[in-house]
Length: 526
Image (cartoon, rainbow, N blue to C red; front, side, top):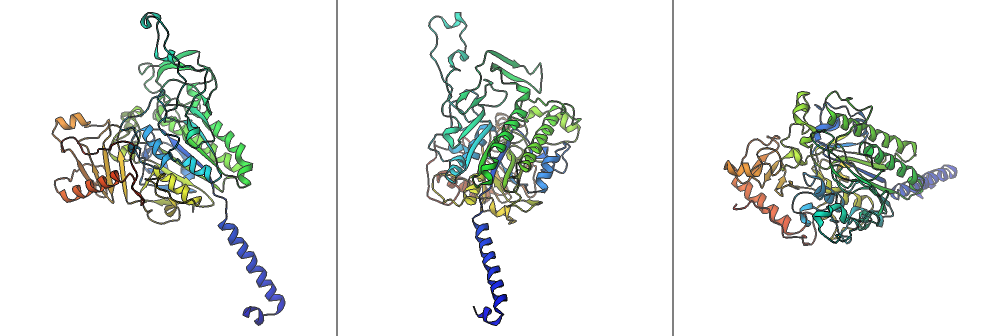
């Protein structure tokens, strides 16, 4: 008011009006609608397989490159596991997969559901925040197919098979809808795992009438196991079909999103996992091999999805994640890729299934025009479990002891800070081997890869290799020099740190919570 007395009345009125407008604008910004969220999870895509995360990448991925230029690229991002099912558990629960009942390996296409209805997920979290939630794609966390009893009589004589025990006419139970998704459309396991059936929120879209499969001998890239397949399930069309469904979903939700009712689309892809089945015009497009062609097709579909957001008028306030569940699989044919100077692991050791970096260091790009400054690159340590805390942070929900136990918000990285609150990373291989990372130091609780690359655990033990491996990634990104003998104190401190985070049931601050099973991590006899 003192300012008003020094000015003429008309001028004072104008200034007061301007201040009022500014205060309203700030209030509006603070109450801005949380972003729509699309989380795209590629399958078996290495950090070296897209241009944003590897300058030496020989596969053209222009749409993902543009996405990175308009968002933020993480160079130290990791899946919680080096294989499919466990990583998906971690993405949705914000909890390390090895805390669940799944100690090693993956589920099949006929496995029962892994995540209990009472387990907090990012789907539940966003439903509480008013989001519509949808899953489209490869679930691979199990759901409960309807079963029927075995027929009477001599099973061997009447030709009874395991598929005769399923009743495809009845609804599927305990699918993504019990884990926080309003609706879902997808297939149960990997695309090389039968049955090949679409399920739409518990309803089988078409009963399988025959069995189908392709052997590795018939097609070393496009093989898939023999099993029941529905008439509306066409293997080569699955990837484009899922993107078509996703774009339909975006268009259906666009108007409500503009009215302040956001959506969350979880889009786990079946590609470039086997069967590696690129379609025209991507066949031979890379000049390398079908795997590289398939990666190019994934990039193309991502371009279509991003374009659909713009056309729907919701591009600015939609956060799109693009990442992978683990490193590249040997099915991509490393020998042929190497002939073209392409390394799916971008100089890191190992690949899918391994405890080494190539097993779990993954591409990770996030684009959100309204909330993330374009063109950022970060070395902040991140894990795919961090989706949970990121969305909790952005929607302003309180922390609870159960939910996101191993999740740290990525918002500080989005804002340009060099790190988040994450200080450690626990990784897990297909065989159940652990590693723990703190700073540049990484301790692998295995004698070998813990997975598929050489030396595998039995061979490593036969060779008498040390039961644990210590690496300094800042000096040795390829994990070639085991520093265990030179640094016994570091080994001890990292084992103690791992033991603490295992025992507490969480690596985030909070009260201790139980794991779902007794977790052991030391190699036998160590």
